[in-house]
Length: 105
Image 1: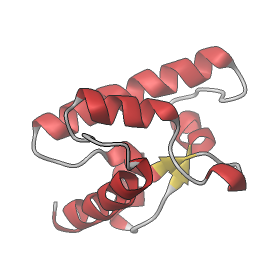
Image 2 (image 1 turned 180 degrees about the horizontal axis):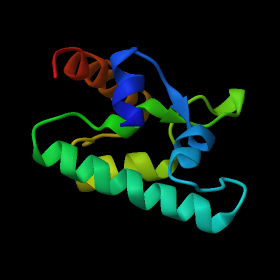
Image 3 (image 1 turned 30 degrees about the vertical axis):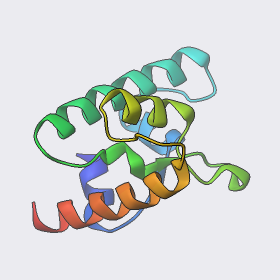
Image 4 (image 1 turned 135 degrees about the vertical axis):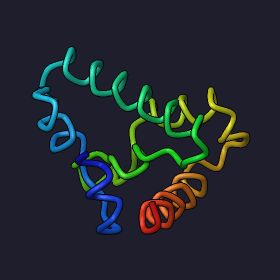
């Protein structure tokens, strides 16, 4: 779907555009909660199949926060992928891994 297309273009996207794909409005709290749950579910499924966390490609639109929200890092810890406090380093490595993975899958 949408995130795979972004990955194959070696790109990033934002929560607003990702939410729009599944008809969620990111200006509403319920929309933000639902997109987080959807992305967590996708990540859990991807990681269980040996793939990296594809939601690493989804970041805030705000230029001061050019990274995923806290839920991404909570999910990464829950999946056993993030084991230290270097969130930015982990995120950069995961973006690279996602781009590499989807170039060949």
